[in-house]
Amino acid sequence: MADRPPHSPNDRELARQVRLRQALRDNLKKRKSQLRGRADLAAAAAGVAHPDTGADNRSGQDDPDRE
Figure 1 (cartoon, rainbow, N blue to C red):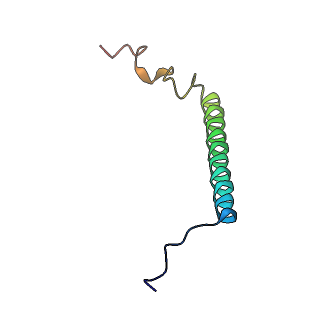
Figure 2: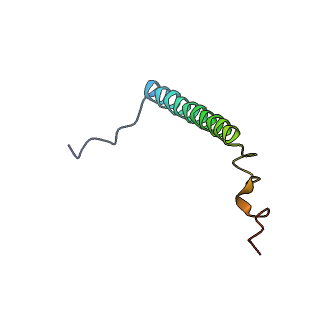
């Protein structure tokens, strides 16, 4: 068994790997986009300006007790 050369994928296998890699990349982009959309909807429902910018009231700027 040690005499066998390492497995080299043929053109068909390489094409399949490329297709699968691209499909996984596209799926990841789609899922990230869906999550961003859900986060934006949740932020809008909670009255937050935008979840990524921190432009909501969590900064404490309007808190009179904070010095």
